[in-house]
Image (tube, rainbow, N blue to C red):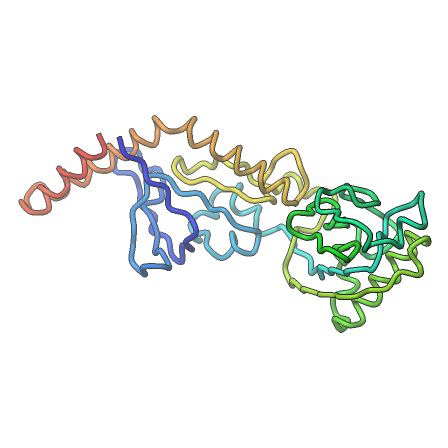
Length: 286
């Protein structure tokens, strides 16, 4: 049978119905922003960050602890900083190569420095990387050096963008003193008032699983419970896991849909046109 997957649309509203036979809550569908009309779905995935999930979850879902716990996750402000240098910041062995950004084409990712995601507890950004090294296809520019991306924490958020960029540069050079003579050729700062949930003791128990007590409703996002922290890797992992959960529940979802359509058919049995439409829906579901 034909399966349709809708993505890239924001569900602005949700209609929740009690399943005719069991009284269980199911999600019928939602208002799709692109067409501004209600659409019915067999299964719904809420793929969002914590603020987004809080915005779209129906209030009646909070009767379940798995959803109510999401509202206890506290999000922190961050400032993501990108600084382009005229050399290779993380090169620690060869000063000549560190200062040489113009003598070759490093689009193959073989530029000098550390090709990895890095962490530090000694500066205002715990996580950073040289994107020109880790993702050269998107971020390497011929004739230029490192593109350092650093996620500054809440301590920096209220400063001006210019000050944040200067502070980030100083802290990078604190971690890599050999790069002290390199110059910043370009900078960009993006602030996000509500970002990742605050990493503190007791938060893991608040993170929802991808499968929920509502049989046809699922959660995805880096904050949901999986092997990684709230991160891009965690978001990807949650997407893989939610796909597995939908497959695991496919038969139950199909059965629920049949039951709901049968119930609809019983309710409209006295109305010929509505009855015929319900019969057509039942035939499609089967």
